[in-house]
Amino acid sequence: MLESPGALDPRTYTGTGGPLLGVSALNAWYGESHVLHGVAFEVLPGEVVTLLGRNGAGKTTTLKSIMGIVPRREGSIAFEGRETSTLPSNRIARLGIAYCPEERGIFASLNVEENLLLPPLVREGGLSEAQIYELFPNLKERRKSQGTKLSGGEQQMLAIGRILRTGARLLLLDEPTEGLAPVIVQQIGRTIGRLKSQGFTILLVEQNFRFASTVADRHYVLENGRVVDMIPNPELEANMKKLHEYLGV
Amino acid sequence: MQALFGQLLVGLINGAFYAMLSLGLAVIFGLLNIINFTHGAQYMMGAFCAWFLLNKAGVGYWWSLLIAPVVVGAFGMLIERTMLARLYKLDHLYGLLLTFGLALIIQGLFRNEFGSSGMPYQIPTELAGGLNLGFMFLPKYRAWVIIASLAVCFSTWYVIERTKLGSYLRAATENPALVQAFGINVPRMITLTFGFGVGLAALAGVMAAPIYQVNPLMGADMIIVVFAVVVIGGMGSIMGAILTGFGLGVVEGLTKYFYAEASNTVIFVIMVIVLLIKPAGLFGRER
Image (cartoon, rainbow over all chains, first blue to last red; front, side, top):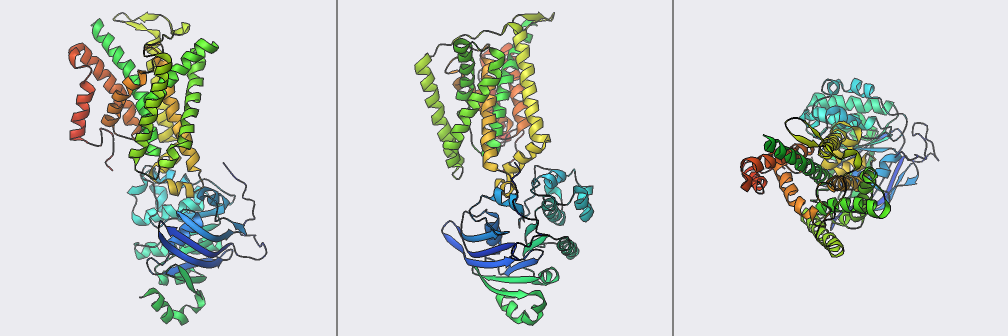
């Protein structure tokens, strides 16, 4: 089952100094509807990057296209310099990309522990089960419970926790704070900071740019299936007016 | 009393076959969302495979238990790859129609070739004869069928409900796209699961060969009752398929003793009652 990753660990990855993930001219469709129109951006090793934008701007579709789970996609998606846009999703995962969907995707017929251990290891260097329970102590207490019996916040922790074990170095997180209480949002923010300090690279989809500003290095703004702006986090304050227009808040 | 125990034994034997066949259907329905109408034909092919192995190649019963499921399972995987895989995006009615058509074609071909009278298959010498239990005579082969079927059913249940491989299957039943996005080759897993389910039918066919005769229509007769069992147990429930299979076999046997006239219809009467009271089946979850 294990395929050779054939690439370097991003913690030590320098390549040609290029991005860990490079997306260009990405188009995607759901049936007849053309959702992405030439999306282009890049993520450097060790960065936390967010995709901001209104509902329907194409943020989730961008993550799904990278993961290979949209019906049709065209353009270039390069991970560690390797083209992945023609691979099936299971091969993409094996290269070291892990995905946490917006709806969390906790399996009802599996208990918490089975959910946590489900994604296969794709590389060396993932967190151990014990480290994940240390990060999310609630999960340990409830490891024999049915996955979907957990609270929303616990399910989100489980959805993030289970992709940390695999050794994937690029994490795609789709709105991890959606619908959660502020105290849980803070916990997830701290977790993202900790993962960054451990060398994980994270591409985050967020509606909540206040949360995004506490964790991210850079922000890309999507509008109607295109990247319309890139704002480094330190310049976020100065660009607040522009951002409000983009997000319509 | 002898007659009661006799009917109980017949019921358990039938139940063993109902359980193995409905288990295969449940496994396939769970992951593929396809109602495999070819299941009866594949059960019949298992019996024929054993008959061929014995009469044309001199390969006996024990090896047939292994070879027939592999051969018929491989045939199933070929059908899955070349035909069923194209239908997953459509309503599962299409899969049902395809497998129903295939079942008629396969049965028709076998019937042309072998007629509809049965061919005998010898009980293996190790299991000939029987034991006198005092209250009844127990043929060894029948005891073997019940024990082997229980072992097969519960090992399958164990693998699906208690192992890592089983957790992949259960997860893929719920959300195949996400399981694949974790790095698991779901299309290959689907093919192998279909092969396994078909293999179970063929195994049941080999075990049935010495009891019922080897006959092109043996699957067609069996599958109607098995579908009723599946409806009663609830589509897709593994333990439900096993318990309902054995349970209804026994109910049928007891009906033969107490009210023989109803023995052919009792399962269908139960099916109607269950559908009215609990449409998802005794062990099924409402969707």
